[in-house]
Figure 1 (cartoon, rainbow, N blue to C red):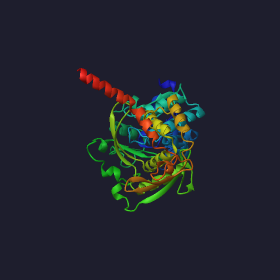
Figure 2: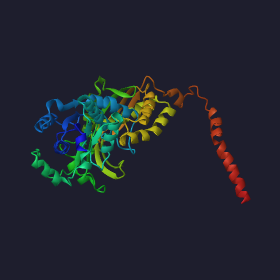
Figure 3: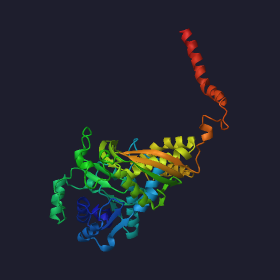
Figure 4: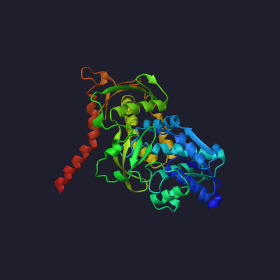
Length: 414
């Protein structure tokens, strides 16, 4: 099998695990390794990844570090939020939505450099292996996929560390012992999982919620004074904050700042993984939480009832497709087309009050509003004849009256 791989594109962070994977690929497959590091707004310094790859023997022309923040927000985050997407009623899918973009860029690089394989560092227990690999095959059907955690012989962290020391791989201070939890981060969110979070009956500990690199503070730490922020939407996408237009990734970064200030977006969640087990994690999505409330509010004003209710019915299916890694499938594209078709008039401004972990609507307006004060008001008819409701009610109740009459006859016969 090893001699079938000539060049592989590795999703590479420069951390200990992917550094071990890089050397393992060189040893096991004897192949040329191309490293790809994606800047998705995770907040880490990415330059060291280049130096580590060079030190490991990767050719300079085989090191790719790409800023994908704008593409991430424009082509993945915003389309997902047009659907008001929530997985299992709570999760804003911050990790899930990043994987198809990373996979897409890996395949693009593979085509660019003539690689015949791609490699990821996801374990055999989680969802990410599915998200990466289904995307790979959808975009390059004949690609060879290498998943080290399903292949290598290491049985735990001590063996990995021994391998690292034997091959001169730098082990950062504090990495000798297993971290108390793992973190995945991008511009939309951070997710914390494992070890100290594995007992769902224990509250998320301070080591997670109050760590130095946290994305949001707790509501208890938030200021006692609320802020009101105005979000402007156009065709369902965020256009400006407080009248200031910015690029998509800049808008999301600003929402993150505002949300973090007010302790918004922390979530302790037990979810159902695609592979069949339940997992518990702590998610921080401050900007996404504000964006979700804002988009929902402008839709409430501008979407027809039938369209809005249909979107609400489609959303759980759409969310599951993203969670389970099926971004590049025909069914997701079909649902996206339907969702996007509903967004033409989803435009206007929403005022949101941010306070102690909460987001409340403080006003909304749109040039395409379907709200009619004349129709809904108590003081004037506005062209609505209240007597018309009688026929509507009787027609809807007709089948129930027929059923009641039948049950009355049946009761007498019994």
